[in-house]
Length: 121
Figure 1 (cartoon, rainbow, N blue to C red):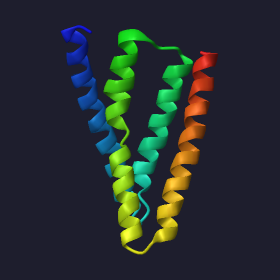
Figure 2 (cartoon, one colour; figure 1 turned 90 degrees about the vertical axis):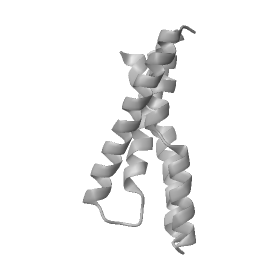
Figure 3 (tube, one colour; figure 1 turned 180 degrees about the horizontal axis):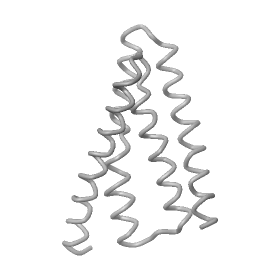
């Protein structure tokens, strides 16, 4: 992999992280609730985008740039788990369980839908 691809991953990674922060902040500031809806929306939209890339059969440097760089930094497994842990610590076990189950189910569905859409294009 060339140095330019690594630079591209860094740039797209920065943009992906900024997009994540922007969407999460916008949703969270409008919805004051214990459930981490902003992170949920980010991860589901990121799963769709990853599925779309797979459906489009993006490969090589483009896959590294878009998949690892942009989408990889946009989605956030660690934040999802931390927020789930905090819900559980705060005694809201039901919300923690919903966060896990809904995120996994909706993430898989979004990725499958993205892959289907990518196959149509």
